[in-house]
Length: 85
Image (cartoon, rainbow, N blue to C red; front, side, top):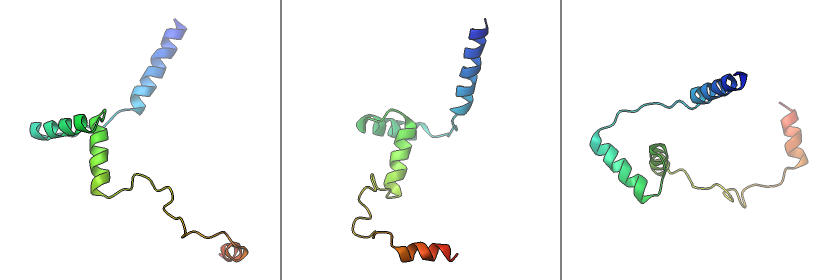
């Protein structure tokens, strides 16, 4: 009996953490999002909206190598400047 109660508490905690926000959209918008979801092989409407927002905001898919050639090694003078604060 104690084990069943423990599982119930864990389930309640997980549900409380993963609650989502409800957004009201028209049927035509839902159909468009569903079409994008299928064509882009996405799993949820959240994934669709995230991808659309990234595209609109020009968020890069990766920032790996973005600072190549722009970042220099940390020098002793740089460290001393930080201590002046």
